Image (cartoon, rainbow, N blue to C red; front, top):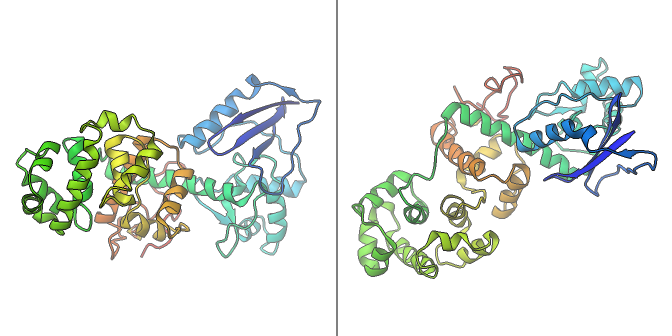
Length: 376
Ligand code: SF4
């Protein structure tokens, strides 16, 4: 037997197998009930598993939905039958233990299916994480519930991104000419529509600059940005943001040279900069990815059946832990969610023709599979 071990963004993974195929994939989370020990008789061989490792890395980056790996899981005939059924659950979707039991010809065998699921020696590749309780709870997972939730969210979010991108196309945000205009826009867009922000920005007649904001009075500034609403408060906020920016000589490069976490914390101390504004500035001006949570994101994720945390940072972390930390992905996904929330998933949703209703645009996953659980 050969083995290899390597780190991924989820946890360390250990692979074990021989010429017959991969026999074990251990998610070394340090949680859950699965105990795993390397045998002294196994030989470490990284090259032997290089293709499997590449496929796992592709899966975790969101570019792979199916594995093409020779596997050799050891178990009873019943367990093997259940494991083979798990492989038919489409990427990004979940089924209940009862669904699998029914597909196996015995609707009363949910418990036995659960047992077989928990013995799956090759998680991820045999996707036992896609099976949940009838009540929608995640129930058990041999490697801990936290990673099960993370893997399920990863798949759903990558599908969400793919469906939105194929329908709306690339958004190329933020819609502004300069980094400074972007930062100003992030403040102006608080409690108003982007249409009103554009009107306010147009009032600068192409002269918007940190120097101008520094030199004009708050009253003059408020008059210019009047179309964005709350203009007196926003003028004070813009002045405060400008003072902060001046500490870096109005240089975005100097801001970028600071550690992301430290910079986000610093931004949050600026008057008028809340978490959503700070994360917009971090992602779109500073170029350090922080996932932006806004009302649209909350509404959409509730409708898609995510277990949405109430606190901003908990929700942000839930998304950030699930998807690759990639600036392009953060940038586009947020912009696509905004686009979708203003075109289809409005307060009163327009579900007809919605690209998230089913998986029909995702090749190979079945045209009729439901994606949005709240479609009307
Ligand atoms: S199907 Fe309806 S509720 Fe679901 S995402 Fe689309 S518009 Fe929103």
